[in-house]
Image (cartoon, rainbow, N blue to C red; front, side):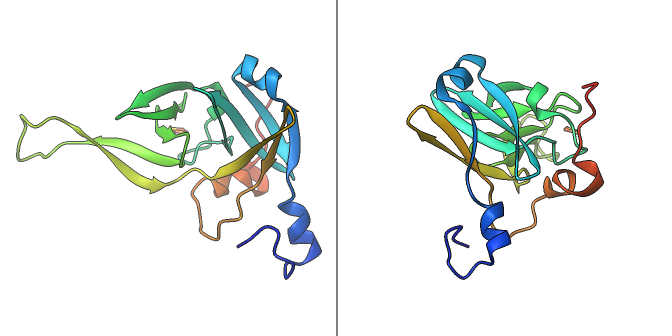
Length: 158
Ligand code: FES
């Protein structure tokens, strides 16, 4: 659905308006920030010259992705959740895992995708300012569970 679609009701339109989250130079320096965008907590990473925004809580059990390390798997940059080490691609929000053919124990493990599990949001750079626009892709994403309702608040003790 187009966020600028004039058919949208005003409330929906408001929810998908871009929100200023910080200065480009500051985020490049810190390499990550957290922000609340229309009541949704997101993390914005700066990695290898690109900005990426996603739901802050891991799709698996709500782990704090802003505290994870970024590593490359199969040539793809991933945030590794600090709780159970799930790997999530920064670009697409896919969950990656390694698989091996049990009938061929000598085979090398292969990286596979579970599909999109973490909702990715759009980052826009404008005149040194960074904006995030929430995704309104009409599919059920596993991370939605921890981005809404009673699960969305991250305790400050993390
Ligand atoms: Fe992230 Fe389990 S909560 S891997």
